[in-house]
Image (cartoon, rainbow, N blue to C red; front, top):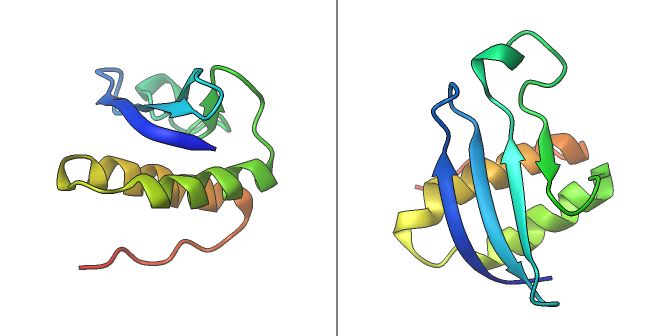
Length: 100
């Protein structure tokens, strides 16, 4: 599904997270977890979106599984782990606690 993590960032809007990954088809897909100040207390808070598609619960689970395979260096692990945890929450799966 994905070949590598291209970029990741924390937005100055209150803490939204962005993660860009290269897909097998060569396209770059950007996922965003909405944690903006404006979304606090609304259904949009902590919602995950993609610039290429709508995300179903099953897709969130599949994306989380593939992201776990890409976590290879300590510089990206915390942010990617946060995406995995949030995607699993949206899939209805209980996230496993992070390994220490």
